[in-house]
Image (cartoon, one colour):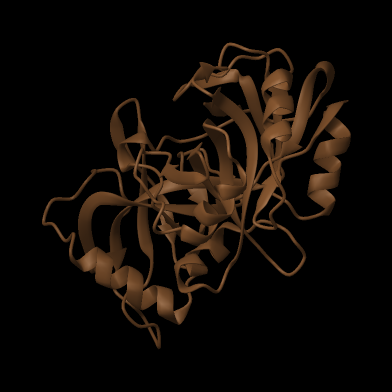
Length: 297
C-alpha cells in the first residue's frame, strides 16, 4: 500500500500521524522463529539484510509485516544515502514496522488500521534492530513541525479506520514532506570536467502518462567511491538510442537503457517540469524503473 503526496499537514481525530522513514520499504514474513524479507518489487532480500532477518526471530508467530528499513545518522535520523553503506556493514540499520497484514493465516487487511497496529505491537519481542513505528493521534500539524525541526523527511497520515490495499496507492495514507525528494530514472551521463573522474552529471527522467520525459541533470551528491561504482554499472547499459527528444542539448552525453533508479533531493519543480538543483542521494533497488512517476502534491 502506497501513500499519496499532499502539500500541507492537518489535524483530524480520524487520522494518526507517523514519521515518514527515509529508507527502503520491506515486507517481512515470519513463521516459527524464521523470517524472510522482500523488497517493494517482490525480490527476496533476506541474505542481503541477514542481520534484520535474524533479529525478526523474536517473532514466533506466523505473520506478514510491513515496514521500512532505514540507516540512522549520528542524531538518530533516518538518511537514505546512508543505506548505500548497508552491505558493507557500515550502516546503523533499523527495521521500523508499522502494519500487520496477516497473522496465523488470518487476513487482517480488512480490519481497521488501529487494530492491526495494536496486534502488531502485541507480537513484537524486544530487539535493538526491530522498532515499532509509533504514532500521534489527531495532531498532524504538531507532528509535522516536530519532524521539520528534527530534520526528518516528513510525516505519514493514516486513516484510523482504514483498510490495507496491497500494492495500491490510495488516499487512506497521505504523505507530507518537509522538503522535496523524487525517485528518478538514470537515462544517461555527461563527460567529466576538471578534476572530476568517471562522469560529470546524470541525465534524469520520469514517466508521465506512459512516456519517459526529461526531469533534469544531477551533478552533486557523489562520493569518489560512488562515482566509480555508478559509472561501472552505467557503462554496462550503454545504448545508441536516446530515450527522449525533449532533453536540452548536452555535449558528450552517453545514453544508457532506462533501468537504474535513484533518489534525489531538489529545490522545486520548474514550469517546464524539471527539477531545480537535483542532488543525488543514492540508488534505489526496491523499485522498477517503469513505476517511477513525477510526484506532485
